[in-house]
Length: 349
View 1 (cartoon, rainbow, N blue to C red):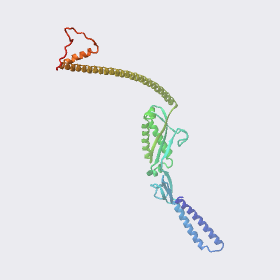
View 2 (cartoon, rainbow, N blue to C red):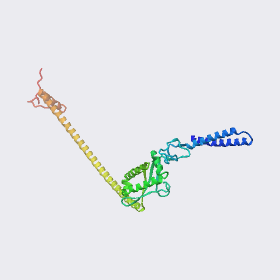
View 3 (spheres, rainbow, N blue to C red):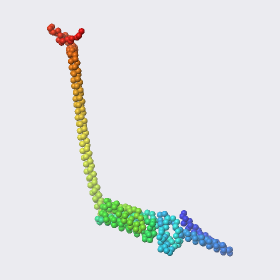
């Protein structure tokens, strides 16, 4: 319960007390009793009631999201106080001043093609014509707020008609002007962001001149005439078919590239196998040649050593020859004039 409500309740009770005192005095007088004390009590209660009502009539509480404009009949105020009432408990001249509060929080004004979304019923979208002569329907929202430092100016210029008289009228005119400088395809596709920026810049400037702040401009939707919508739909269908055909071509190209890559891989694999086999054959040939060379070198070295051994001891050859013959000869006939087939080695005694 606010303080003002409590004070107003006490002021009402003070009038009830005043009426009660009067009734009490009348009853005493009807019974022939003295009313001297009753008259004093009536005067006191009356004064208290008047003071309480005057106090409560001059107290005004302003919410944190509001500012109060004081309409004054006091001489020298020129009808409106130059400063708005700030949030909290404020005092005005009772019965000479009155307060009109204005919200300074964000407000949204929507102009929609949908029948129940905007501030006005039915289709309230902005009809505009593009630079190439096409008609478009812009669905938009303007998020705005009253500048807290200019509340008095807003009251003097617009009072409570600023939404329809200013925000709606101003935004619709600016939207039409900006859209008229772009082609239809630029408005809904390539230059959509630029369109929004231009509308926001111009709308912010105009609202600021009137004591308002532009919080945001939202371009909700852009619709076309039925004829142009049919053309756009046909174009999109044709573009979709082109994209589908391009996709099919790309698929076939990828399949062809995949086949080429597979064949190339198989060819490379065959080449690698052949190279491996050739390298294996070369290694085997080199190994055999190396083995033969080592064997030949070993045989040559063995012959050299044998030759050195024979040269150093010639009888070794005769002994080797006898050993080769010995296993196969059982009887040997020698000529009478040659008792020995080979010269016997001379053994020293």
